Image (cartoon, rainbow, N blue to C red; front, side):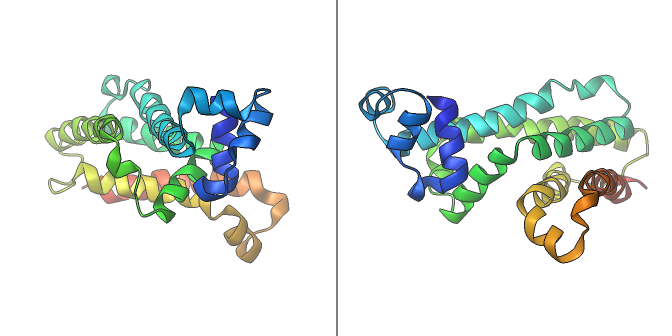
Length: 193
């Protein structure tokens, strides 16, 4: 049921999602979906929490503390970019939440706690880079996270409009690889002394 809900919310948003579709795609009944999750909104909240949990878990599994600071940033940017590209449904869920002006994310204490790891991972890398005199002293984890996120999310969220206006659809893979490398280069240039 949960994967069906994730797909339905990613495709239709919260307002357009239908419990009947979630049930049908999960080979169950609407009554069972409501029994387990109570309401469409509570199911959406669980999906939203799941999206963030998956992303943060992916970052933690990289074990970036084992790498020198510059290499850790490269691995983080590449892994983040790849994760976003391979999970476009996650970006759609986050976009839905932004269209709702963060109404549900503000209600979740677990999402706020989960996402602290995004900054603690970066804080560790930045501190090591500053001690090695590789990174600028004024570099802040939140700014680096925003920079990385903006490039990763843009690749997925704007792929159709940006692609239609500026790119050759036959070169999608080549362009994706180019933007992945661009994201790495931008992050390093922002951080390096």
